[in-house]
Image 1 (cartoon, rainbow, N blue to C red):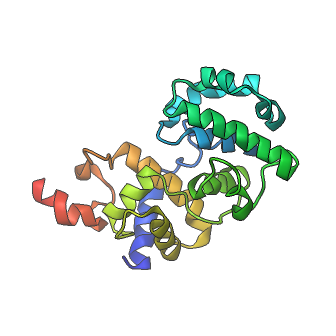
Image 2 (cartoon, helix red, strand yellow):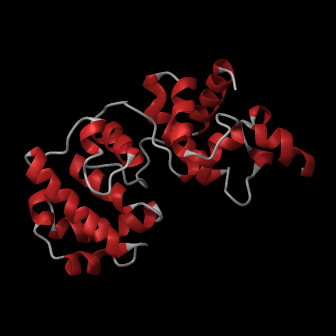
Image 3 (cartoon, rainbow, N blue to C red):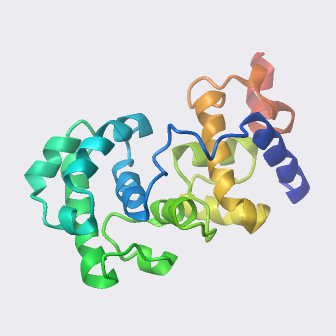
Amino acid sequence: MKKQDAALVYSLLVERYPDARDSPAIIAKGSAFEVLVLTILSAQTTDRAVLKVRGPLFTKYPTPSALAMAKTEEVETIIHSLGYFHAKARNIIAASQALLSTFGGNVPESMEELLTIPGVGRKTANIVLYHALGRNEGIAVDTHVRRLAQRIGFSNTDNVTVIEKDLMALFPQEQWGDLTDVLIAHGRTICDAKKPRCEVCPISSRCRFYATTAKKSI
């Protein structure tokens, strides 16, 4: 896809989802520590499920030092409703310990440093950098962004690393963070994984999936 076509798609999605970044139903709100922990917990789990454990978790463990000293079993009890809660409990405790031992209890502000923290990959790091620290260093590619990038025609692969590079090449840096938010909003609202509602999609005329697949069945 050409840059000018990608820009038009983006503008149409921003018009359709003007409040995507400020939605209360997202986990990327709060302190950098909270965003870091919640994003680690969000893997293979819905934001809605993560938000349910947010209150109990941070009431008991409000700081990196508190969570770093937590017993794994007690954290598991709080987050047991989430998928892979055993590994996630270990990761958020280890992440808190890393914040204390390496970064003085603060969440680091660079991609390179964030990637040294247990449980943190580029997706999590990008979310923390943008939503908690106001830095656009990359594009968070979650399941929605990966699916839509391929469907719309932003990328030709399902490799998240390549997708991120393709998106960064298509869009100006100042749009990277918000691009993730509007694509997620579109994926949740219209471009569902199993039953995309192409008949009401604001970008169907610019979408590769609609042109090659969906249009024939509508």
